[in-house]
Structures are given as structure tokens and as C-alpha cells.
Image (spheres, one colour):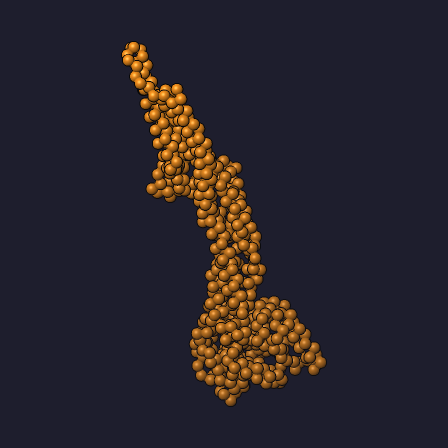
Length: 530
């Protein structure tokens, strides 16, 4: 378990999850740092847990090599008075083993220290690093690589350069929140009076606190006289015995980079994809899709079909002379492959298409404004790519919608049968009257003619058929108009549902996925930060 009680493996996995979610959406350098931290954490966890790596760093002339020798009780590093600067890390190892760690640290020079020497704690690996202010870039790079991988860091400073800006800005401040694994040693205090030594140490402690390390250990020492070396030796020996420094260092690295990701993700948003926002988006797409044109065509076509089926038979054929608007729009044909079908709707105007794209961008913008800037830009770019061919996508949605134009209400058949029955009655009455006229014309014996209220039945049949037929036609026209409006309303709902599916697929789903990835990144980073 880490010092904050959260399993380190779980935190590393959470960090990797956050990085995966943020890939291409947050600062690339931050994500590269996070990947490096996760990889370093896994590598260190796979190596020896019996050893504690202590890196001793400092500037040229700070006496760090002398401090290493004083801790080891033997000459591990050659002091600066006999060579210009440390060029390669050199290790003092108490006990056996540790070769895997040294290879990982890329340290070739090793000095085995007896248990009777210095710290006298088996498992301690003490490293003398190249000077962090070396004029040779390769020397500084070696030091920085080991500093990034060491379990415990000892920074040796001298009274002349303890406030050096490069030390604090480039090395100590980036270690903020690593208090448990940082020790700062003010060396060469033997060159100061007791009062000056206390004043310099206090000022150094103030600077270290300002660097974000308020709980870091700050010691005054002298490698030449041995002052403070025992305290430092006990601090390192205790860390080696407890074997917690490696875990604490890795946990701190993970925590720091995870907190940076949390900051980049911003505050959790309480915004939700509301029904009103979706309706506004669909409203904007309907105009570009030509929904009103289709609905109007369905209404006219339904009335035309109803009149053709229920009108007065002698005149209903006239209605078929009028063009079918659905056929003209290409919406009357079959739908074996709706995904391949296209309509013949008029091309949407530039203004209408622009308004549709504006509705899409407004929806995406409202979500992107609640995200980190890079993440919001990625969202907008994704939605723009998805809607490059928006008019064709909308046209396909219209063409693929089942309009049920071939469905014939039952009352059509009933009225149609009545109309034909009435027509037959009228035709019979007409022929009957014609026969009576022929008989009268040729002065043939009169035929018996039944009457009803003194009105000949054939006359009633003919006139009644005309009146009833026309009345049925008028009633059917009224019912057809009502049915056409209802069918148009159903079609509008179906078309809106189809347009909504386009909006969901091309706009809302990508937005929701980006929001979910941001939430996953933020949540994972919070877990990693502990």
C-alpha cells in the first residue's frame, strides 16, 4: 500500500487509463510525462524491493562527493579537489545484490561497502551523481536520469550557492509533493559561524518550503568535520531498513502527474444533454432535410388516393390526372434497400444548409465550452468531420423512412363498395327508364311501373343514385382530408424520429463519447492521485 492507503498497482492502472482517455485531447508533453511515470513505476516495482536507492546530487564544489565518502566511511567518490567534476554516477552498495537496479539506473561503477562502514545498513545503494550544473550536457543528462529513478534524493548545497535559482527552479520545485523522499543538506557549515550557519539553514528551509517541500528534511552538515553526518546517516539507514522509500517515491511521482491531469481536465461539469437541446438540434436539421415538403406531399397524396378510391365513380378518374407529389419526390417506390435509396427532393438552399450546420455547431459548442480547450477543439473537429456530408445523410434518412403510403384504410373499401352499389342501382334505374321510353315511343303496351309516393321507382333509383353518390363523395372528401392530416402528422413524427437518429449518430453520440472519455480521464486521474 502507498502512504495514503491506496494500492499502488491500482493507481498506476488508473493513471494509464487517464492517459488513454486523454490521448490526443490534452497537452502532449503532459501525457508523455504521465506515460513515463507509469512505465517507471512498473519497472521499479518489478526490481528489487530489498534495496533502497539514494541519489546524492549537487552542484560543482558543493562537496557532495565528500558527503558520500563520509557516509560510506571510505573513499567511494573522488572529491572535486582532485578532479574537475563527476562525469559518471558511482555507487556504494551495502550488502549483496542490487545489480538489476544498477543496470536499470545505468550505473556501471560499483563499490561494495562493508557492514562495519558508515551507515551499516544492508540494502542501501548510495549514488554519487554528476554535478547538476556541469557544463557538459551529457553529465547533466545522466544526473537527471538517475534523479528521476532514485528512491530517495539528497541534495547537497553549499553556503555560497544554496539560493541558486537553477537549483530551485529546475530541480527542487519539480519535486513538489515529494517531501517524504527529499533531504536537503547544507554542507560546509564549518566555514560559517554558528549564528551564520543557523541563519543560512533557516533561509534554506524557507526556500525549500517555497519550492513546495514543506516537510522535506533540511540538515546542516560538514563532510570535513563530520557535523550532521550522523543525523544524515541515521535518516538514510532508517529509510533503508523500512524499505518504503521506493514505494513513496513512485507513489509521489504518480500523484503529482495525476494531479496535473486532474487540473487539465477542469472542474466536473453538471451539464447534461437536455431534451430541449436535442429538440433544437433536430429542429435545425429538419429544414435542411425538407421535412415540410415531404409532409405536405404526403397530405396531398393521401387526399388524392382517398378520392380515387371513394369518389363518385363516373368522375373519380379525373383525380388521377393530377400528378402524385410523392412519386415526383421519389418516395412512392419500394424500399428493398432503404440505405441505398435517394429522394428527388429539391436541393436545400445554401442558407438552409448553413443553418443546419450552425445548429450542429451550436450543439457541439455548448458541450465543448465545458471541456478543457484542447478537448473541446477535438470534439468540434470530430463533429465537423462527421457532418461533412450532412445533406446526403439527411436525404438518406428521409428516403429510408417508411411512409406507409400504400396502406388503405378499411373505410375506403366500404365506401368504394357503396359507391359501386349505388352506381349499379342508378344504372339499372336509368336502363329501366330508357326501356319505358322505348315502349312509349313505339306505342307498345305499357309496362307496369311500381311507384313510391306516386314517384316511379326507376326515377327514384336513377336520381337517388346520383344524389347518394355525390353525397358519399362529399363525405368521403371530408373524411379524406381528415385522414390526410392524420397521416401527415404520423409521417412527421416518423421523419422527425429518422432525423433524430441522424442527429444522434453524427452529433449527440460523438459528444456523449467525448464527455464520457473526459469523465473517465478525470475520474481515473483522481484515483491515481489518491
